[in-house]
Length: 442
Image (cartoon, rainbow, N blue to C red; front, side, top):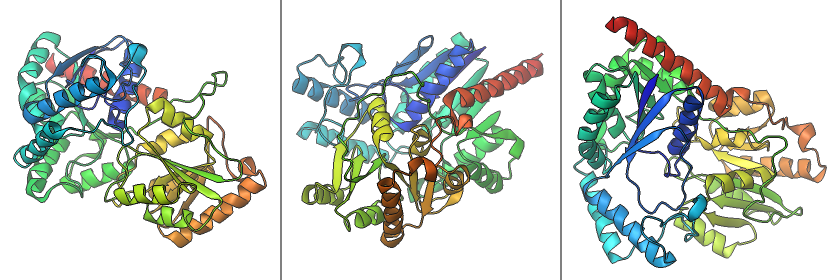
């Protein structure tokens, strides 16, 4: 069986969607599937996720201002490290180079100019400046469809450009699975693109061979919004790789103190995912420390970390392995809910594999229910008072060494969220679709 994956976010990119398809392609290849990936050409990435062995990756330029910006980042990184541009971002063997807090090398005036050009280009290309890649990739996609003749084409959203390319494959008669991380039309979709986003989303839900989503809430939203057949949707959540019982424990990238309740948050902050209540609750105590691993924390959070270094600590961007080791060494992992209940941060599922208690802040939803039902954590309202009360309870649990009496920290508590399990369900899905497409053609 042959699968063509269209994924802008793919290794060496460090995003959650990149990690998702690094793991899922690994699982497909391990089951004997021929996988070919169509992705963007990246220069100077600070962290390089490994590409699974046994697959072929075709890369096309990001196009226009995006390509020029990537080149400048790469050249600037090589100036700082003394390495050639094609090695900027990784040493031999894939070890990441050190980068400035925030995760990416700072741009010079030329880089800032091109970044501004990128933002301007985003005003005219859908869904934003990523649209430049779609225009530059259509020819290579047509060539791959003719030469590789995939049994199934998969589009990894976001960005929506991958769905536009997947639509091209579908219109040429290929079976097509649309993997929707989030709805195309979301709360953060610019007003100028809302109508087009909904139109693309509707076409995808009605005409794709199958649609996969990461949450049941997203499935219900899309089915209701477009009157689509629910049987054409499958839920394939984010996942985690469990640590083997005999594998060595990697030292975390930061020290922890037994005299403090050590809270850890790894992930991004957005206008719809805010840490204010958490930070305010932490600042009320001297015996609690919040460690944040984030590429670009808000400026006000940087200022608090500078003025309260014993209570708030920023580590900048961490690679996946470092992030996991940090999670496993924490007392408590913190998740902050998005404003939109259909969106579940992918980090939640990575947290499940760390075998540590989870403090979920915000609307209870599926995450809060999962933690409560399995005994892995607690869910509280998004207010400094509610978070403060939870911290007080967590401190009592730590002081009496009652973690295992208070929470179920079994390493195999969530087997359905292992990447191997999710990959197995994806394999069954693509096999069924490929078989159905073959019988339809004959």
